[in-house]
Amino acid sequence: MTTPQILSDLLALLFDLAVPAAMCTMVLAGLALRSESGINFESGGRFQRWMIWSAIFLTVPQLLSWFAAQGIHMPGQGGGITSAWMNSIDTSFKSFVTDIVLAKLVPVFAAFFVLKAALDAAQGHSPLGSMVTAIFLLAASGTVQLMQGFNSGSQFATTDMLVSLWNFLAGTILPEAAGLAVAGAIIQFARHRPVMPLVFAALAFLSVSSLWKLVQVMVR
Amino acid sequence: MLENGLLHLTNWTANVIMPTIAGLFAAGAIYRFSKAQPYSHLSYAALAALMCSGLLRALEAFASQAGANDPDRYWISVLTLTNWVGNVMLPLYGTLQVVLAVVHYAGLLERMTIGEAWVRNFLSAIMCFSLSGILRLAEFWIANGTAGVK
Image 1 (tube, rainbow over the protein chains, first blue to last red):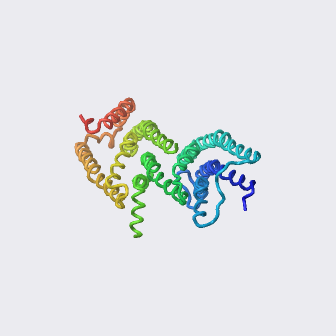
Image 2 (cartoon, rainbow over the protein chains, first blue to last red):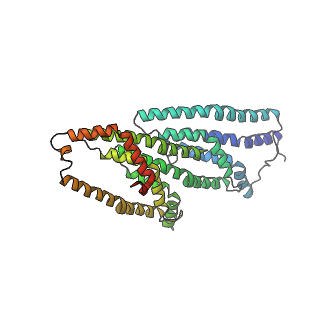
Image 3 (cartoon, chains in turn blue, brown):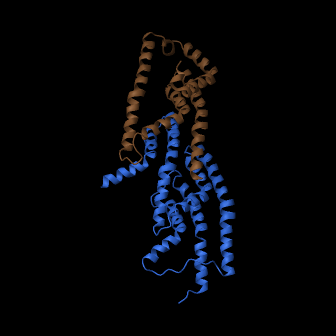
């Protein structure tokens, strides 16, 4: 039985909107990051969930190829959208994400977080959470492109992408955070507050891969 | 983009803001010294604020004593930190304590703790007027490492 054209068009539309949807979930992850302190995330929290959704949206075709490998018949993913109405929905949504969300809304959200950083400092809290969130939001589209580069193309592309994301965090982001931890330790010292937790944290940021290896060795 | 943003934030904090507030820490240390209150915390903080990137390099050197995938890397980096504190910082601090012991025994600093406060006030006035010079001297020492000790 051949698939009705409207369903094929709907399928093509959904596949086409996966990357813009990943951009939206990345922005939502950025907003959720601030509600979970900005420099950390809650286990099972909204940031984690939106990030996983971003990874899933970016690897939808590969995820479906896993189902196909299990013997489940999957419809073909080739061919564009033939219906003009569906095409206009596709174009409108992409234009909304690119021209409104990424070009207009995200810079405003980031600016509000920079303003919030100043208010956090005035209140006696660390401004770092809001600053990091502002940077995350401004880098949302770049992060999605980076994650697209992590797509291995295999049936396990979703988990491969999460592994690559972990390696990126452990090897690139956390060593940069070690510098912020050193600056924070000096400011803590000047304010007669505990310093050693930040020093040990800086050393841990520089050794995350080895800590993971240590845990694996402990379990063996 | 994200790594560039965080890298620039770290560089700006450590290389622009921290050296700037080192001056504030030093000014606070001079003020507390003039009031005969504990000031050493602020003076060490001023020095540390000028050495922010150097301290990070030190921690990176401690962490790189073992390979990136070595399970003992964290333990070795903490051990190296402990060795550095015990074999470098403590002897320096001990030398400073010996110098202070001689100075206190000789009674050279009695005027700052016993009797009139005019020596302390005079020294505070000198430091207030020469704070920028003191900061430049500290920056020169830090920039030149051991070659700065002449």
